[in-house]
Image (cartoon, rainbow, N blue to C red; front, side, top):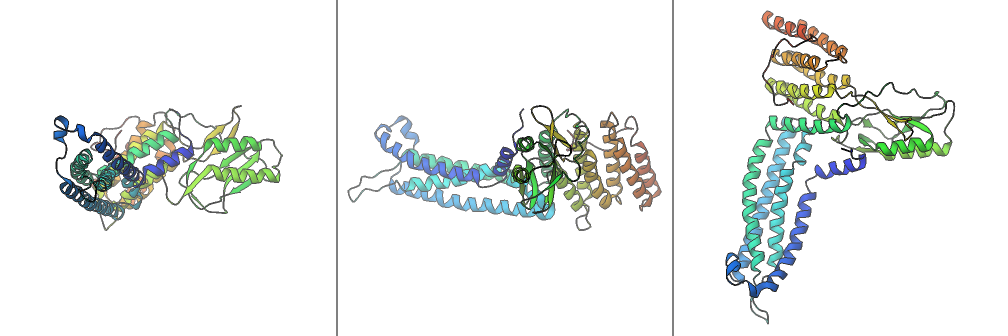
Length: 457
């Protein structure tokens, strides 16, 4: 599957994580249909007698107005209730788990469809209401039977939608559901950034002499959300140079602070002043910044969300080590999936196979540090959390069949052993944890030490 470019991915993510696009489109469609269907009613009015016509609304103008007014009035109230419940859920997720989880709710397609259904039914009923006429002042009575029937069907569908929405909401606010969604989104991002069987990128090309390399300052402040790879390669080829992006997606950029380096391909050559300005403009145009991290190209964002919830669960005010243990299971599943992806900087080449761009991307060590450091710092005092962290290292050791990341795994095992030795455990607990630490890095796991978590893949 051909990966989408950075700009298309940004637009897709922006539309996916906003509440308004689908409901707005539904309102526009409902208004258009609410104008068209009364015209259709007028055209086929004489033909709706018996047969199909018996299934349609059969009341007079006053009854039609009462039905449409009841539908419009009740649905706008239901829509307000739905918005209120959504806002309360967002507030709960922000305060109880992590503010970075709000994106998982705003991107919930079920919420989008529910709001679209309610607003579409309201808009359709209100639009059709304009076409109902009573007899008098030279006008004949007119009741758009098809339109009123459709409005009634939409109202019934909205009632069913409200029941399903409430059931969906109670499921979505469970921490297990939220963590599973973060896990899936992170896997999708991982597949885009680090495809399966991604080859090793080799050694990063050395920059030219210090006097010929130029630093490229950021034109905007914010988080680096995505990179347009094709544009960067084109800019480097046009300038006859190599561009190295020194910040990876998810990093914070500050306006006026360098975030990339460029140097000519020819040793000792320098960029003309005009080329330097073109490079600065092209590189800044090829990167997107925002005031929040996204899942477009930022694999670390999913790890950050999971670790934040684990750290919050281990805080004294919440004290929920069970949630932390479950989250460590998700982190282990993601890290084991990452082992075979050769994470790290990416080299982009031109049509001639010459390296033109070096993208800074997190290494496996970066992800392992992110997954281990805070849970170890806040949770090592709990025997269950400490045991699960050691089991994570053992699972990684098992998945790392070629021993490519053995050094990083053993480094974290050493940190865990130091914390266990200094921790306040009973002799039996300390010995059990030290035995688990000794098993890390063995040829085969010594056996399952924990129940399977929903984070497994």
